[in-house]
Image (cartoon, rainbow, N blue to C red; front, top):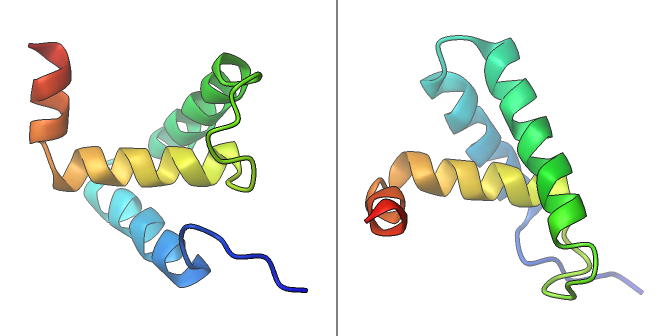
Length: 78
């Protein structure tokens, strides 16, 4: 039986590449994704939003959304 994921692996790879292309330092963006994934893992430990999506994948998707849709960040900060 094959599991259905919210995002296809090719879509996640494309978004990760967007992040790497936009970053001035590949190491720094990798550490930022890992830190966000770790933080989200412990914040959402009891949450059952999407148990099939790994924290690192979720971090990549969120960060690429913030990169391509800056209005997301401005809505949160205002």
